[in-house]
Amino acid sequence: MRRLRRLFCFVFALLMLVSVAPERGRAADTVIFTAANEKIYPLSDETMPFWSGGTIYVPQDVLVDNDFNIRYNRNRERNTVVLYQMRIGLIFDLSSGTAETQDSQIFPAPVFVRGDHVFFPLDVLCRFFGLEYSYTRVTYGYLLRIKNSSVSLSDPVFIDAAGSSMTQRYMQYERSKQPSPAEPDPSEQTPVEQEPAERTIYLAVESTAATPSEQVLFRFSAANAAILFTPESLSGADDLLRRLASGGGTAALRIDASGGAEETLRRIEDANYVIWTVSNTKTRLVLLSGADEETSRAVEDAGYCLLHFEQDYSGGYPSVSRMCSRIFSAADRNGGSCRVLLGADTAALGVLSSLLTELSEGNCTQLRLNETVA
Image 1 (cartoon, rainbow, N blue to C red):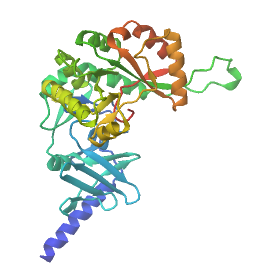
Image 2 (cartoon, rainbow, N blue to C red; image 1 turned 90 degrees about the horizontal axis):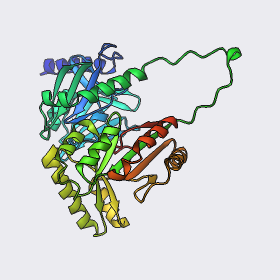
Image 3 (cartoon, rainbow, N blue to C red; image 1 turned 90 degrees about the vertical axis):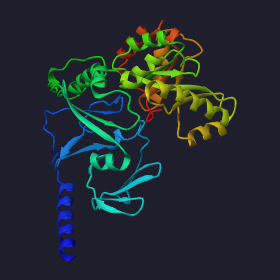
Image 4 (cartoon, helix red, strand yellow; image 1 turned 135 degrees about the vertical axis):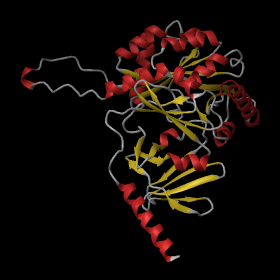
């Protein structure tokens, strides 16, 4: 018995050494794309998975904001992280390199911490949360695809459907790694016009039918459009919903909440059921119309994320120049970002090209609306 106990302590000590080792375990020129079911994530050195000691590690970013229904909470004072899903929970002690289950079983589970990102051993997550993963060679590197029972597309079909998205993400990633130009000699500088402030814009349109919404998506680059569906506009949008689910954009709901909390939740659940039957995904992003405080609180308590927009053009457009001026001002007041609802897709098509051009000239970066920035 003592020999077994000494052996366990020895193995545990080795794992502790691995957990604090500084090596990344990933060659500098190896790119790993990450997908959760049909959702593919942007490329970033800060959140890119890596191998260490024969185990691949993934950040909390790919565990939340998808249909895994895994929640994440980090307690910096106690130096712990909690991952939980329904009745399953794991408490990771970052100091000791162990994890504890909900029934008080403790086992070695070293993690890596890089700033605000915590990287977890994927094999542990798969074992406890019923996940599986595949690791496939693709054009620009490898695709790590984490899946649960909600997965809709096979790996070959998904890789084919997400090919353009991976190309766009890779190009953006490569541009972000380009060194900044050398500073010119101050004595040789000539006065230049000052660059406008950097701004981040999140654009959304309301779907009236599949065809105009598809045309809106075509105008956007890097799949950065958010499409808001009413329960009625979901009809006939099967292909559009599947495209959004595979990384072509963000799907959200616009729900009439004037009937009270119970009716509103029923409408949300019914709409999500339609999305689920078509694309095996759901959305937690919801824009409520006519909601009182009680209804809004009930929707949030049910796990949905309420959308808010600094600029709402559902009622009509001024000139594109005035729209951009208002968007810039709203972004500057809001820490450099602005969420914009452009109204119906049919109306947005008339101004979208000019709007996107002026926003680009105003030093605006368009990103996809998600739960973090909703």
